[in-house]
Image (cartoon, rainbow, N blue to C red; front, side):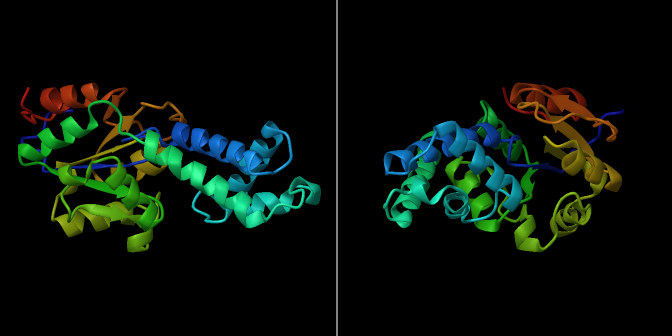
Length: 244
């Protein structure tokens, strides 16, 4: 593929692209289960954790009452006379404490975003999820100062969800960017590669977590395993002259 004369915008997914959300969530849920057991819940940690994972799979990760549903699925004797609200609160507090301590971007993310924006390329977000949750991640990751505030698009906020390509078209139109001059970086081929490619955007498969396989999805224009890889390809293939 010939290099572009100019790249006008780079849009990123958040989860497992800018940070290891899946691994973080597993640690946070494990800590929540341990806190609930310490607060009086009776049961085997592994069994309770597996039940929680089932709840999340059935009700989605964006559901707000996972721990309440978990208690409904356990035997009545599991509460052993304890107030369920206090047990749930212990789980919620432990989950959020983990988030405060451990949620961080992958190495090189902040530096790359700052450098890309400094050379005049717009840096934005196109992400699937609830508005408050996704916005909170950007704040906690310390990425907001490095983003174009008019180029942040959250599916819940705009009413279009991945893999519908309309979410990408919406972002391009709002930013006034041609598809061929925009790069999208994401981890999920079905959600993050096929739809933007359909519109003519450049795509980069972020394989920092290696949770997904390409399967029969269209091949991306680029693949990276670190943000140092992304820095190199921006300079080499897309003529983005980043400072050293």
